[in-house]
Length: 460
Image (cartoon, rainbow, N blue to C red; front, side, top):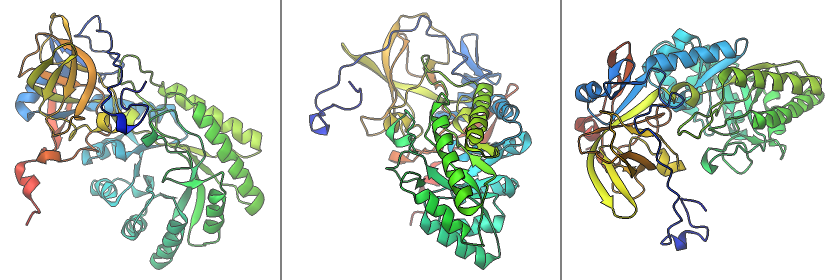
């Protein structure tokens, strides 16, 4: 039975689902290296990341606080560059994007995917090479397409018939001939949450392979001399931990490549299989090894193209979460502690769904620990909740904390580097927290935390 909804529907929402709380871990102080940033450890009982004590971070920068382990993120960028040597690696900026992240991408030689004018503006503001940018989006505006053309964005992934016509017109007006890919919905559904599975036909992204819409999109693009078709794009979902779905998607894309060759005499040189690779959020989660993932995807593409009698196209992948997710943590201060007899203890922190909406949105799971000290107290079944006016304002649904937890203690939540800051809001007029990067025993702000003045700015 689902923990999140009654099987008879929302009219029966007053009937609570059966709870199966997790077993308490043997060591409440453990920092699992598969989940926490690579430089994490405990020093004198307190959590340190990048050589910086979280108590010092809280004193200097306040809480809530997003903390990014620079060495962890850069090392994962290098892991991808090495594993996918000879292919293209484009970081999916939607996971978390700011000027400093873009600078790291420049240093490490990766490309970048953007999905809006704002994301493109961040990249261009620090001199990211536009030819290494791919523009995504299911509803790109005229302004966004115009800016992409003027900037010289490397590839625009077209998502609809309307966009093909719009882009063809704009390209002619600006005297440009952009490279484009067709986003294809292959019908491969990743085993993930409904809202992050993106390759089945009944959703907003892409052009359906099974209905013939993708093939028609190819015809329309090839009929426009203003557009240069270079490949096909597919993205089957998020938090994927094996390559099985990619193999099915690649085979279906290969079938379309064959059709394009037979119908138009055109051999497309590029194939983008997207991203969506998973990370470990809790102890039972598996995360793919990057080298094994790269070898597996290359083997899949090589084999399906050989079977189809096609030359092997240049492969592109779009990791986001696996680069920035594990290197980020969120730091909170405990406020009130409320014991609900016979059920659990509610631990309220000074943030909540405004800085991490993923639990409320997807039913996401996280690992959290008492971070400001170690404790040998017995475990206490807990629910980590925020301060917002929503009963669904939950960060960690069920986990264990030491029973001597007290107001003022610091709680750290692991693996929050991806999507938490990107999805952050000002619900209840809470300012969005700062983002600090840590490395070599020092910290620096890379995104300034908002103030009340920021919240009021723009209001008349």
